[in-house]
Amino acid sequence: MGTTVVSIVMGSDSDLPVMQQAADILQELGVEFEIDIVSAHRTPEKLFDFASKAHERGIEVIIAGAGGAAHLPGMVASMSPLPVIGVPIKSSNSIDGWDSVLSILQMPGGVPVATVALNGAKNAGILAAQIISVQKPEIRERIIGYKANLKQQVHEKATQLKNKLS
Image (cartoon, rainbow, N blue to C red; front, side, top):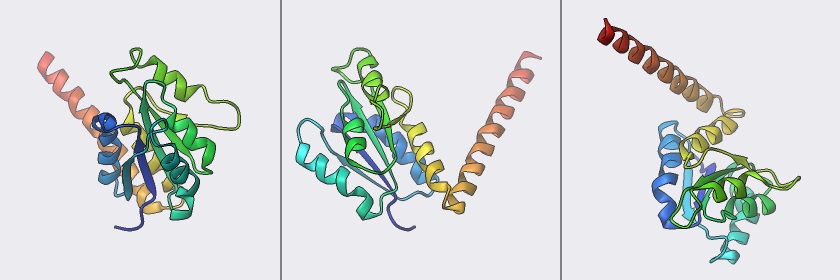
């Protein structure tokens, strides 16, 4: 394909089942990505190095997932000039996921984090691809095709439902 343009990071390997959804949709859309564990609390030096230098490595969008107190997306956004998409994750130490949602959603002025739904890594991947598609028409065409396929699936399911009820 090409150069890595999206970085997917998570606070722990326990977040991988959710964050894999972002990797899967980026792969489907033909967007190059990398994936790593960067803990805001356990590896602050790695976090600083990653967030402050990602743009120098050609990364264009960062997807950061975290559960519990969910500091990773906000800390990345505080140190990076890149768009950051936060994925709140319902984890074993979360309060039904609400602590993660609010930690990522309620960022102070000047440090934005685009926030998707709880465990919504697939949408984070799609949003990252859409951001990149502003400058990459080939990605935009794949997104158009992806959305057309979603539309077709709904039409097919509606037809199946009508046939079943007839």
